[in-house]
Length: 63
Image (tube, rainbow, N blue to C red):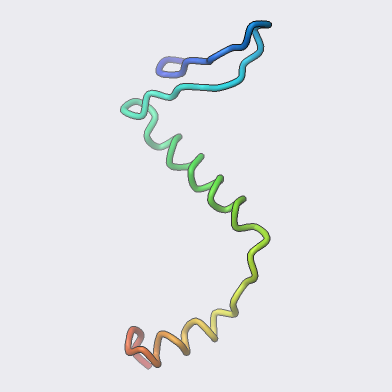
């Protein structure tokens, strides 16, 4: 695959990857989204009704 380079350790095991973002910007965006969603996996969720109510109070959402 072009635009992808692997960094290996002394024993030849892949330990990192370099991605040419000019060539694979879409791939990077998907990976970044995945990492963000995983980092937030254990956060407390807020019901959409509560979010909408707060936005209406602040005038950010019309009734």
